[in-house]
Image (cartoon, rainbow, N blue to C red):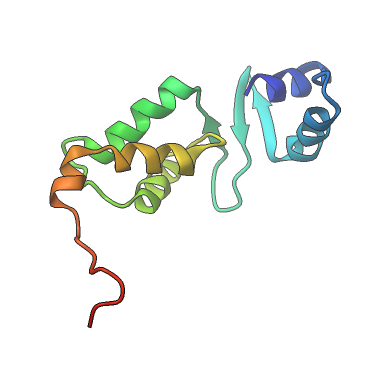
Length: 117
């Protein structure tokens, strides 16, 4: 998030040419409001960008909380985005947390092995 915040605040780019190009190309997808970074959303309000620790807390709350149902990672990601949150590695982080969930591993759907009739 920091490179985007710096670029949107005062136009500062990283020293690496490839990183600077990546920031320039994807910066129009973000907006800075009152010092908070948001990602523009096509379907609703802007999505607040979260730091890594905040993101882990949100994933765990959406997946394991009292009203959660230990859903698939795509379902959890859509719930997170409907709540108005975003970070660049949202799909990867959510999939990793759900793969490590003990309850999901014990009680999840068992898929048949390939090649058997």
